[in-house]
Length: 316
Length: 273
Image (cartoon, rainbow over all chains, first blue to last red; front, side, top):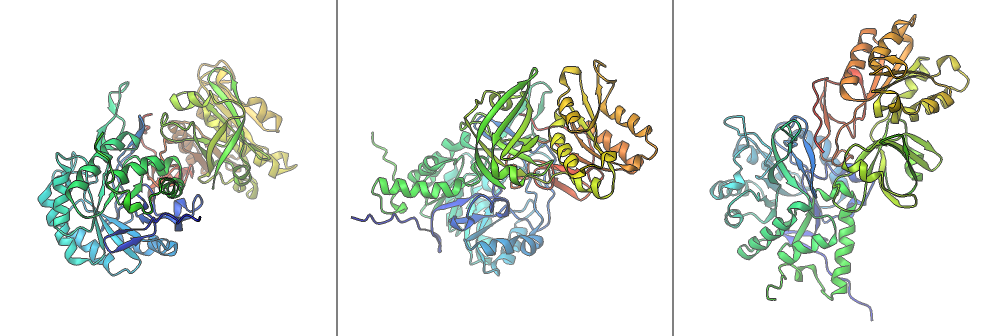
């Protein structure tokens, strides 16, 4: 008897993805960088490198360093700004033919988020917006020093911002959460209440690496964001906690490097996943994971990926 | 660009901490130009976590060679990889040297190597020699610099293909006593017309800054290959940038070879590993 193929399609708000495997903002460039290694059309969706209203040159070097089972980065949202993004980067995305989610951020103000959302709302090929309110590598806007107090660290600020952006866009709206908080569920609920269609979690963990010979930080901005398998258990735990508290779909990410690590996120409660730093180790890993998920579902007689979401068995 | 599972042919020690590794990577070998690099996943664990970039040292049919020093955890582990094992290798990456400049403008190529910087310059020398054919007048001049005699690599190999080689060691144990950049200054001063040369350099950042300063004085065409810690190696993460006159550029994508006048030379601290 022919087995029916496992269903991989999922909904993120009103957006239908043919499969639940996405690539995370800032780890996939503008997709062109990966075209030689994989068929980009196979992806469920692509999240762009974060774009800001004005061009940003990013942080001084060194910007990255390796850590046990992970890495630190402090790129500082280097990007050419929304105008160049629309003129020079978007045409390539349009050609790919998979849903494009544009990650947007501002160091300065909520008004910039709104201006960005308004610009992108009119572009048909943009399927959704991801609010990057959780980048740990920006300077404090007022003092120009130290690390920036993140919007994603404040439930009220999150709620205010999501509400304001919600008013100006019909695109699918995703809020990206920070793990650098006391209670991620409070922030998740605030974003849901304000009209976010889905949540991405987690962004990087604020971290510090020191060169003991020179007693200097290994990254120019001193602190930076930790990513990779080192943070995966934290990410999975946060997805599980948030899943119990909100109804909107979750996009799980943090240290996914293979099918098994992707599956953990679904079982914890994610409807979709994003491969981030894993793209650096194996540029075609995201497409390998799509195949791996299908195999897992078929082997275990699970007819749809939706059945796996939140299927954690808590009783021993 | 290709992602290949390459069979390791040999991984031989060359003196104390240096190794020459060859593997079968047909697609990469076919496309590679001098100055480009490959990115190697040293094993399939998370230690070391990231890939490591290596300049392509030599291409021979389907085979590529890299030359490396076992300095950190990653290269130390790489040196343990055995013949017949597979190497996960990505490449050829980045932009190589504009070797055609020297050919078209009839310049004498001067290759300046500091330490391990010799690695990609051998591939360049071979390409130049092959393209030059019988025009011996313009055969490459190679300046090799290292701390001491036993750290001079590839002297014989360069001579064998018809390059003239001069050596500089910091302690004077072989050749000129001093920096390779001092040797470069001396070499240029003996020429009637320094402008008849084209410089191709690879080595530590302060050495390249000095090469750039020397060549600017003479107005000589100069290209440098920069070394930088990388995360993705393919232009996606923006981790390995260098300050240029047009803002930050990616060493892995717009580089690793740059025209020296493009670079804003500043005190450089490498990302830790």
